[in-house]
Image (cartoon, rainbow, N blue to C red):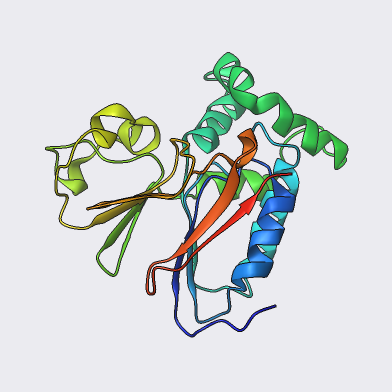
Amino acid sequence: MPDAPDKRLLAIGDIHGCLDLFDRLLDQVAPGPDDRLILLGDLIDRGPDSFGVIERVLALRPVLPQLTVLRGNHEQMLLDYLTGRDTLMFLANGGGATLSSYRRAGFDTIPDEHRDFFAGLPSLHREDGFIFVHAGLRPGIPVDQQQEDDLLWIRGPFLHSDWDFGATVVFGHTPQANILRRPGRIGLDTGAVYGGSLSCIDLTSGRCWSIPAG
């Protein structure tokens, strides 16, 4: 693996069960214990191995002590499914692939360790002049007054606004052909599960990595 500079601030977009792409991206980026790595949510659903992705993330925690994993709308849909609140929404948005991956691993349901992991995910993280969030922020609303639904689901009002939130917002959720970089916004969902790529950015240097699907 290539040598990695010290103390990078890294962010990775929506993985959506694409364990092979995630592993290949980790090989390229080679995060170490001094790096800060933020995963922007939607680790699960639609792709072939959501179980494997979560196992990989849990295994990374001891070796990457500065790892932060955010909640995406798909993690929220899984939590709602597990509490019986919205089964159809979860299954209609790729949840069946997640359940299948757990069954292939020998689990009839989501194990407690994974349930606790999903339940403990934050929806927003701030660091070094950046705001990390899965979907975005609602313009005109202070960051500390944002609604959870917007943090997980918002698209148009955030994407089509140039509202200054006082920091660059790093987000996923809305697939783009390439990493989106414009004033105050960095979008990292590059459609891994749709045949696009899985992307990472080092916010300390501006370097980017994108691993194409297939």
